[in-house]
Image 1 (tube, rainbow, N blue to C red):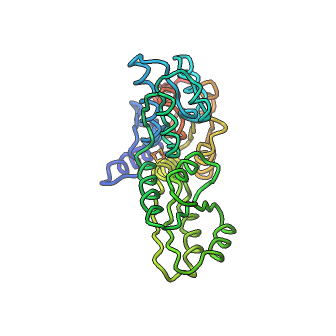
Image 2 (spheres, rainbow, N blue to C red):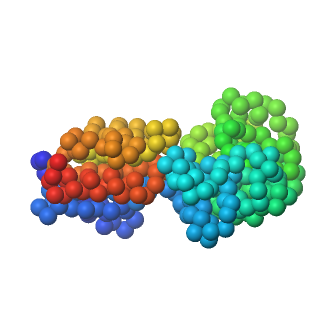
Image 3 (tube, helix red, strand yellow):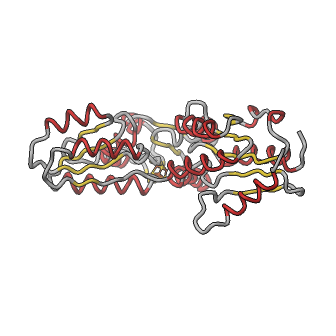
Length: 324
Ligand code: SF4
């Protein structure tokens, strides 16, 4: 591969900048002509990692039965492994009431306030793995709605995180997902109504701005705009785009139903024609990998570390030892 060594040196220089976008792990072959870059932001975000670790900690503590309220993560392999360790998934409040007293772990998306009371009433111990960024939104809407503000949540009304946020508002909360709904709300909301706008943590930033602009366009009162979007998704996409721009091949790892992995794949494919979507190590066709140059690796938010490690190891073998 022409200029592979120069390209790798340029990547090293970029990684040495004061605040680099590319902060992942770079392995370089002895001849300096082949490299594998594993994105720092690949895989679990802080909140998901914390929730999954919490469940494994409970297993270690050995106090059964252990339940999670909803699957802890949208990854079949992880949920199956937890099941094999005796962890049961409960989806409804009725199930909480019927289940034998045990420990209930609340996942990173959080739950409505009433679910905490149900867990207590059912005699379970509660382990709260709600992501602190989501918990912060609960506190905001709880306080603001108590003060009489109309809460507006920008997000998907069917997403468990949004359902959880709604469950912390004392009055009725409005959920707005698109421009049509924003226009309708803006046309109906009376002048003088105090509005507090928050966002689902994974909502698209540009879309949030656009919807806020529509909602507040005709208002001359003080609407509180609280941008509660978490930057984990954006960081993952920015890093993947940056490495895909210079990579000779990209591997994106994640579940085929994971929308954030699909989005990541699209972003990388746009920059690097040779981008591969793999669910597990078995999907990786090493004969399609270049033997020299840069191979970049990223992964969706629900991809476990061991899977990323397995795929990276094989890519390193191929490109660093030049072994297909
Ligand atoms: S708020 Fe951010 S860090 Fe927390 S679970 Fe959601 S994406 Fe992950």
